[in-house]
Image 1 (cartoon, one colour):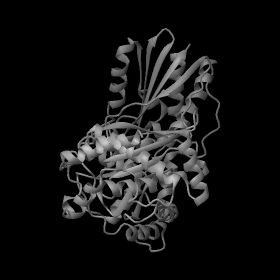
Image 2: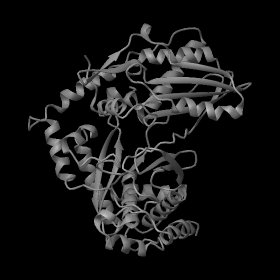
Image 3: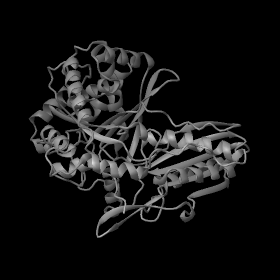
Image 4: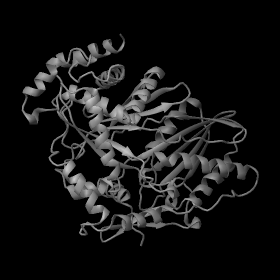
Length: 479
């Protein structure tokens, strides 16, 4: 029996014991204009399932211990649906239905495809991969392999591609061998877990945030999203500052977010989550699979601390995290055994991702292709700042995904405006202190949080506080 990787074990546990849901669906929507051969596209989809074993894998268990079973090509009931001609106004409903349908991982292969024709030469393709079999870095090789296979099928032949050097099941076995046993003090698992145990000691409560509603006892994971963007000139200043300080662009954004979170809730001990690609070997670069790992960035911040000092602390913590990145986050939670709650994530509630990996691009003959975002209606964290470079105009595009259990959309729009404002100020003057940030109207909020008992941190905003965030912060962003 083939074991699951540690990341897959977490996905399997959620799917088995919390019940199937679409929370961990990764949808990709592609709009085609031209003479699309839907039969060739279907054949290309099947070729990709044959090429990547993880896409034709189901997950089961023996006495509670999960294992993965790779299906042979002949065993697969192809998860492909051709909807035929559909009126354009019905397309959003089809996309929502396909992207929101859950997987039963014990019987369903973790990829499905649906094609819709909505005009004479207009088509929409929806691909949905479950997180147990893929991540953001998997979408580029997925799109590339579909392109190669489609070109071959249109020409009447099977794709000719070199054999993959490894499959995901090889990675799962290699991961266990690399990490070793936690009982061996010299193993990678023991050494790196010791770092994280010391680094994250004492994190016992959720980050203080200005909530619109009390946190429910059980998170529903329902979510919404608000657009977030930075113009090209601000991105250029971020990149210039990163070069001058010997840091990455993501570190600049992380430091700015830490400062904002302190101003939002008054916490001086701020922990932010961040994904890391996890493809530590070149043989994994062309593979579809769940490699992304998550680490926690814990920063001490106060009103008199300058952005430069916060950034240097972020740099040191991030470099240490990179050196200790092999322990999967799922295994780390098991080893650290933080206080668990069904209401919030155990170690951090806010995540920032800088998505600078290759974009998925389909290159099909006779067809122009554009990619569109798919609203998922879910949120894995309280707030997820998801940013990416836009090379078409040099800007930064992204969104804040938020838990609708906790926040109104208008509140998160205020957060987005405030984040942009913080970034603009710190790149203009890196010596700006946290307390001197030009976010008017929140001094009284900081005093209220500081004076409140610890268990009251993160309480809902009162009417006056909401007014300051929604009106004054947004007004400031337009100055």
